[in-house]
Length: 154
Image (tube, rainbow, N blue to C red; front, side, top):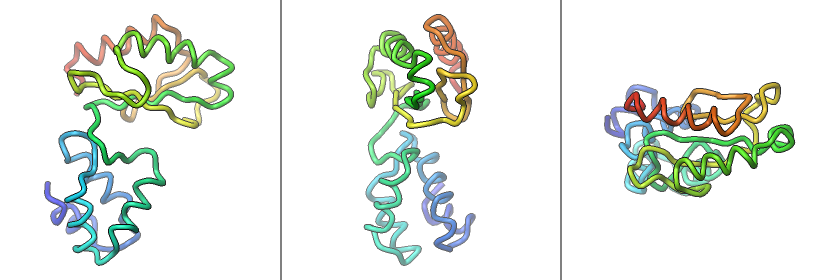
């Protein structure tokens, strides 16, 4: 879907910018928002590139650099940290062979930190795409990653 089609579908109103940006990122093929899309969007919506870039940099769910098909967000809030998120980070890094902020060579997973997922009752927690996983341990993390990998991850 093109930027123009997304704006037409969502409506060319500033209040729709966040959803338009989500749609652009989702349709990019690499889970990111490219500079040419930002420039096209600015022209279509008659807002500045700086305004769009400021919005993108404020919200952590957006990225201007290519990412994997699946985004893993590990909660780093105090409750998750107390409940062992560092151990979960170690397990994820070993399983995926990447560090925070990196993407696996097969472009399947990107590992990112999250300040809070709002799931303190099931700490430590992570989110993969739109699915939250809680009460994590190294074995559970490995099983989740294996399950997503085997299912084709779609």
